[in-house]
View 1: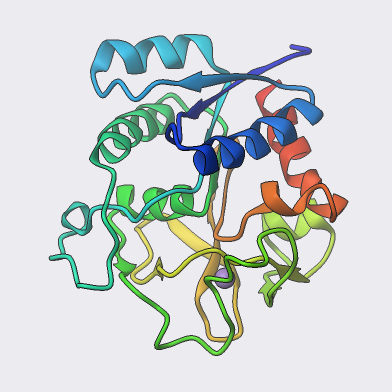
View 2 (view 1 turned 120 degrees about the vertical axis):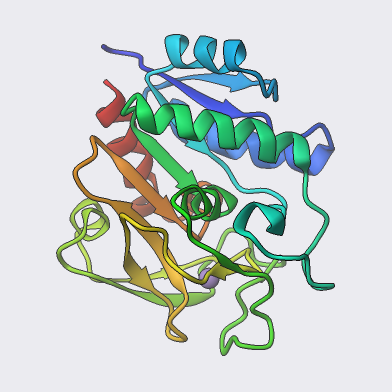
Length: 231
Ligand SMILES: [Mn+2]
């Protein structure tokens, strides 16, 4: 398939969300994909239609996930969730996993993957961090280093075991969901990526390659590999 179709949930209608959404679309199109933005219809027939139309799915960044979805009460430092996104994305990601569709989960998307596999999140890491992980002023440039397991898909795709990445998160994976593993972490030990073995293609990263790709072409390799897996 020359032009695979990648489904991406709609991130919202504000101008900032639209700009962010466009960064994902641009990276996917540059890698040769056609992008289908998916309205947040949290019912089975909509999810079935998305599965029928799309060859793979990208789960993008966004607001904090409702803590009740991983069995916790919200702390004051947890920001307002978007229940329309939570509801739709949970249904879609579960169905996509069952259908063995290639997956690329970024930021919130990585946290969602962890929650679906029964993992939990730290609701706020700002008091535990040595580096600035919610560096909203430097969206496109690297903020902190990560260590990558040389035996991971991530190391294979990037051809390195260290990398400097941007960082736009104030939450992090706490307990890792069963079946997932952590192929990359920050100096403090926060999970910066998740992988799922014995699956066609499932890559999840806590940083934002879509915001770095224009200035740091290495990051575009992740989109190329994902789109190739959807072909
Ligand atoms: Mn980080």
